[in-house]
Length: 147
Image (cartoon, rainbow, N blue to C red):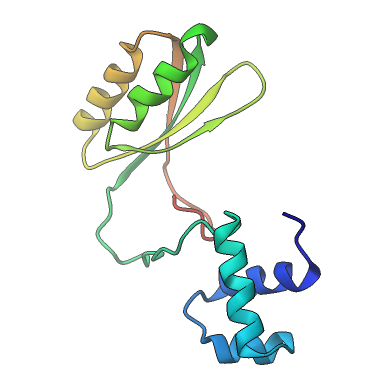
């Protein structure tokens, strides 16, 4: 789907505040409410808008331990590894990357013991060649990514 400048402007506004009213968004973009609703529907239908979520504030009780694990894979088992990683609820995101590593795996747990158990499960997966893990000490800023 080819995105227009209005589509890009709309997405920027919705990323700032997805709960902004359709009427307010339409006014800011200089289009009718009906046209804006049709635009949003088109963006959803074409997978540009994949969903809506709640971004939790800093004072919400979250898993205090976050870790990024880099993994090198035997590429023959790449789809199987991804399928196995999806079953681990502590795994929040998996990114395919370039360079010496194949994946970055974002893990969140309540305790170091649970983190160790999750990393052990990952290391035991068929297709994982090696890993290295880095625990997050402090988040300096977050532009809204689910970290």
